[in-house]
Amino acid sequence: MTSPLVSSGRTAIVDGHVHLFDNKANVYPFLDRPDDTFVALVGDYSTLPRHYQLDAYLTDSRTRDVRGIIWHEFLSTDPIKEVQWGNAQAASSSIPQAIVGLVDFLDPRLEERLDIFHSLPRVTAVREHLGWDATNPKRRFAKRPDLLRDPAWRRGLASLRRYDFCCGLEVFAPQLRDLLEIVRLNPDIRFTLVVLGWPLDLTPAGFEQWRQDLSRLSACENLCASVSAIECIFGMNWTVDQVRPWVLSLIDLFSPNRCMFGSHLPIDKLSFGFERLYDAYGQIIAGFSPDEQDQMLRAVATDWFRLQ
Image (cartoon, rainbow, N blue to C red; front, side, top):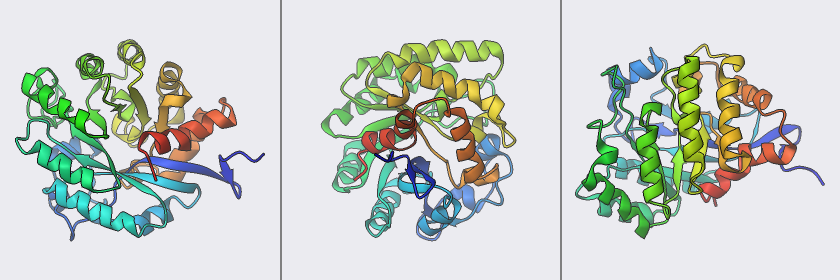
């Protein structure tokens, strides 16, 4: 029987992290003028397109057999309007799409937003940007460094129990211990560990601390791990040898049944682009069985985000 991993000689994938957007349909301030925080993450992004829709994505990903994408919000000024626009776009898509909407668990109108998201059939997940770099003020997305410990924020998070969304909490590696407490306190909420757990310290000591923190998190069965945005971690000129030990450690801890991969397009185009990225992923996981590779490249994202 032919493996679902290959179709007509091309690797089948569900891309676990994509941004589709149109700066005319929604407002993205960082696309209108340089943003210091965005520059701190990716450097000069002046070549980033002001609109990036499915046809452009499919052109960039044509070397793979894309079976679906997980569409992530892109920091618009109106997250509800953005998701409604994305849901309408996805209705006529040639490939299945699941949508991840932006939330703020301190927002007094949080439940209203969640109700709207719940009414949109392709919204299956939410996320909040909580990254806080204690040493670099330009690498801070959260309002404060202590949100994961804030009782009011935790009450907002708990409201997810009334919905069927998985939840991505985007944190940097020094925040993983606080994230562990959140995941343990909410075993009935499905969490996504994003961007490899976002290591900041790439030294051997930083690697060991990151691995120790992930080892504790991996014991939580309500958590899946996502590999994407590697250019934001390792720089635009990353190498396979640089990335390999981090990715293999993540898979070793979480197993192929709880890991997924994403392109981070179109931001990845600021680096080497889709084909080189997925060639690198293929090299890194080449030692796994075809079924295990299929789990990581396609099946886990399909099931986790309930891609229809």
